[in-house]
Length: 153
Image 1 (cartoon, rainbow, N blue to C red):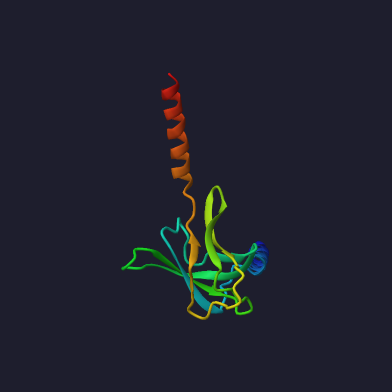
Image 2 (spheres, rainbow, N blue to C red):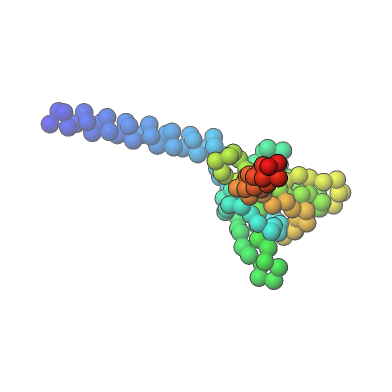
């Protein structure tokens, strides 16, 4: 009986510590969604960008990707974002989908322009750049190396 009480208390302590670390990591990891004004951008390809990914400006999280859909008329991917209301983006802002590492993971990087007017609620970013596909780049490189070797013979 005495042993079972000790095991129960130790189990409760472990659960409390695990819960504390979960809350701590959630607060410090900055994974919360940003509630703010909504804008969108059209891309020919999004390369794995998904809902919940970060929107960054100069490496600082300023928003969250809230939706990814396909425009049925243009066949472009429409990426919807929620941007912190304290961040005002010029109308000539560029959106670039970037990779967090070689192992994958994407985020939206915003590069502000110099326009004096700002993007309104529901505005569309005109200047976009789709992500580079690493497999395609490697394939082109390997194919060009094989071509060079065969022409050298």
